[in-house]
Every structure is written in structure tokens, then in C-alpha cells.
Image (cartoon, rainbow, N blue to C red; front, side):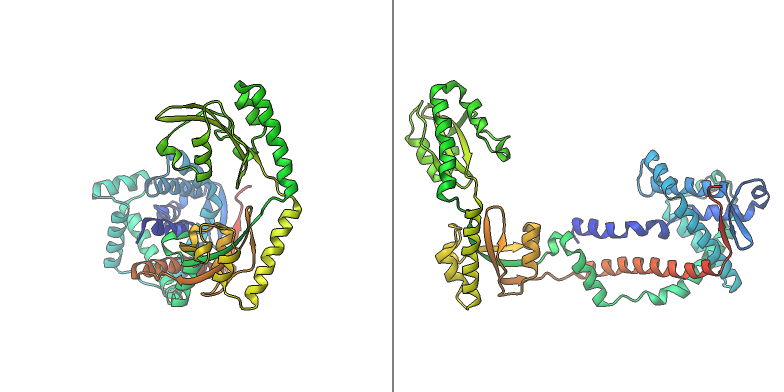
Length: 447
């Protein structure tokens, strides 16, 4: 099981933690049971049938929740206190529901044996890493409890648990379809479980029209003339023509590159820089981003020092519409039964893939941008998409193969555990809702 998978699944259970584990929460109920005298002088904040909840009890529960967050979930002391305070209303609600569960268990005469109580206490100490009886006694004393009182409340808690387990556990059956649904709904958060597809595309680029090129060329010529008149101002002049998306680039700055570094440049750029002498400036060179102009500053056997600027080729609406019409014609040919690979080889503007039918290789869906992912995820094997418009042009995607990874047994069991926790919480809420409906509960939290 991968760490990312565990992290994602654990995140799914976070919202259920407060109901599933309230560390030391039973202390609060114990105090409520054994301190009847103290309760008469404390402010009552809730009536629950013939019982009450006091401000002191809720404050204690908030404090104990902060202790849990700090010691079990590794919150800082300040963060734990803030989080516990935010949960104050929910903690009161949980306490009331727990009191009603206990009342129902006592009414139904549910039994907890001495052996079960001892096991319960042992598990409690193990869970919270209380290693010795002395340490346990100190913790009880800090909470104002005696071992007898703790044992009595442990018995009550066991009775409540037996009631809950008897009424709720039979409803926690998880079907294979439930596991698969959870997997499908969360697959995009699990990179190792993403579908992989062999993907092709037919690409029609947005290409500037003659008027678009002419407008850019006029700016290039103006910039070249300004630089020729004031060579020392190359960087300042270059920045005037820099598109916003390249504002933080090396436009206009002196760049020194070795022969090895130059070999990674596009071949057209390599050829221009190889032919220019020191002090010479190139003619405009068209690339995807626009029209480039280079000037070589220095040349040695080891390094070439140069500067460049770029004027973007802005697309007119006519250029965009021409690409849309072209892709629409190709889509109609596909609909009429023409071969995808043949059309791609003849018409695609992706020079790197057109010769092999637009093959993009095997891609995990998570590697694709969200827009493309949603489109490709919906395609069956052998199917192609409607034209998809991006910033650079239009694509028609085709899925040749699809590989859906299967869940391991460990992953399947972990999902079942999560779903059981979720369903337990739903059923616990539903059952205690019914108890609340038939109880007298009056809350005076803000009086």
C-alpha cells in the first residue's frame, strides 16, 4: 500500500474522529454521575430527561478534547485548545446523546460482566499508552476521579457500547459495489490507481494570418532600429516588447552558453547563433511564441554570449476561426469513416507525432490537465473525442487502449474499514436521533 494511498484514505476518515474517539470523554460522564452535590451550585446548561449537564462538565469535556488532540493527534497546545473550543457545541451534543444511550442501556437491563470491565480498562490504558497502575491513578486524580468511579463508568460505557453494537453493527454490511464506488469517486486522488491510456491526437494549431504577422513584424523592425541606434540599451528596449507571460524570463539579458548548452536549443536558433558574428543582429525568426531576434555579443572557442527579444504573434479572431473550421472538416471526415491515423499523418500540425498517427504514448489520466483528463476519461477504447480547444490550438483525442488497475486485497480491506466507519457514524446518528426525538432535551448554552 503506497504512502499517498494511505494518506488519501486517512483523510477520508478525519471527519469521523470526534464521534469515534473522545479520549477521556468518559471522565466527564463519570463526574456528572458522582458529583450531584457540586452540580446544584453550577450553572445548568442542558436538561436531559431527569438529568442535567452543567457548565463545569462541558468545560471539562472541552479541556479533555484538547488533551486528546494534543496527545493523540499531535496538535500543539494552542491549536488543540482552539480546535476543542470550536467543537464545544458538537461536544455537548455528543455528551447528551451518550447520556441517552446509557439511559436506554440501563432501561434494557444490558449486562457487562466483571471480566469485560477489566478487559475494557486494560484496553483503555493500552490505547492511550498508560503503562503503569501508578500513572493511571495519577491521571484519574488529575481528573478528580477515583478508580472505583472510573470502573463504574467503564461498566456503563460497556453497556452503552453493547446497545450500540447490537442495534447498529448488523447494518454495517459493505458490498463489493460500495467498495468500487468509493474507489471510482476517489481515484483522481490516488495517482498509482489512475487509469492508463494509449492516447493519440490530431492537432490543428492556431496559426497567425498574414495581417497578424505583418503587425508583429512592424514591432520587430521598430525594436531592431532602436537597438541599432543605441546598442547599449538592448535590454531596456527588449523589455518594452516582452509579452506579460515572459516578464520574468531572460529577455534582453546577456546569456553565455557553451556549445553543449546551445545543442539543446531548437535547431533554427542554433543555426542563427552559429552564423552570427560578434556585434551582429539576426533577422526575425518565427517560432511558436512569436518572432525572435538575436544579437551575439561575444564569441570564444568555449562560449557564445548573446541577447534576444521576442515579439508575440497575436492571433486575430479570423485566425482562430480558420483553425476551428479546419478541425470541424476533419471531424466530419472521421464521422464519415476515414482512418484516424491517416488523417493525422496528412493534416496534424504536431510535427513530432503526425508521422506515427498522433501517438502520444501511454499516459496516466492524472498526467493530463483537468480539462483533457475529463474528456479522455469518458472515452471508450477505440473512441475519439469532439474537438477540444486549448490555448495553442484544437485537438481530437483518441484512446487506443485502456488499463484499469485493480485494488489489492489490503487496499480493498482498508476501503471496507473506512466505509464501515462512515456507515457506523450514520447509523449511530440515526439511532441517537430517535432517542433525542423521544427525550426531553432543553439546552441553555448561551443564557
